Amino acid sequence: MSKEVETLIPHRSPFLFVDKIVSLTKDEIIGETIFHGTDGFLSGSFPEFNYVPGVILIEALAQCGGAGIKKLGLADGLFGFANIEVANFYKGVEYDTVFRMVIKNIKVTEKYIKQMGRGIVGTHTYMDLSWICVRFQ
Image 1: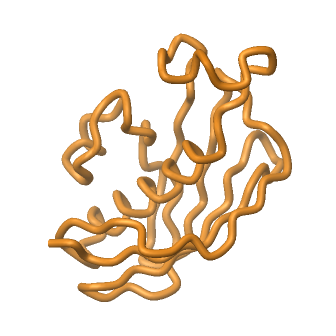
Image 2 (image 1 turned 90 degrees about the vertical axis):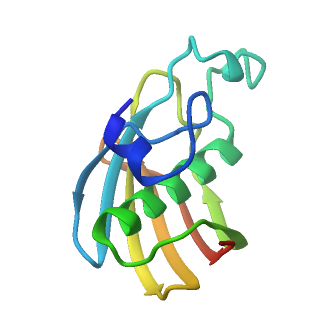
């Protein structure tokens, strides 16, 4: 887990789902994480298949997007979900694989962030998502 990511968003283990920010521009943020089979919070979810729950993948993309926004200095404060517009899942993400998150910034203000992203394993898109976050504080 990257100490840098912990300086950017308030989440902490076991609910911090971004290992590192790989690259970023004002338009695109790319991050990665690995969900390990030894993570206790995963033990009861799809135990016969070793799949990461979709709600955790949604949270991972949002955390990646938020960390990138903060690192870029595009907005400050505490933001949280206001709306999940689209969430499509195409395949289950298995434990112990690199989950790459590619986030596009659609609109960013001091009070409102709209982003969309893809969750990728290898060269295949496993999910796509679009969401809105609003500033709480």
